[in-house]
Image (cartoon, rainbow, N blue to C red):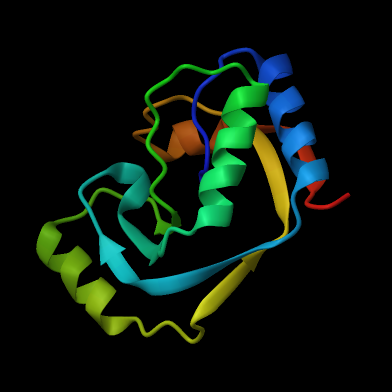
Length: 136
């Protein structure tokens, strides 16, 4: 799940994630359902309910990275990255039943990627720059 998009400075992003990971424990989010969109990286996704803890984590990372971007947090977990017709996306989304009501997120990663990502080749170019367990 993407909770922050901003700093092109990897050091600032890593500083933000390491600070946030030390300060926060796991985050539990309520799954609202399967949705779809025409955005490549949100072809099919699980939408989560926003909560105070997630909003605060997002702000902690932004503050530590000294970020001023206008990124708006919309908690979701992408299941499929693909260009496909709306009818097929809608049918696929309707066919999936989420087998859980809540997801526990227990780690953070800094990922370098092209934004906006619009192809599979660009996804393959993503690189994890730092990773940290929450509460560690």
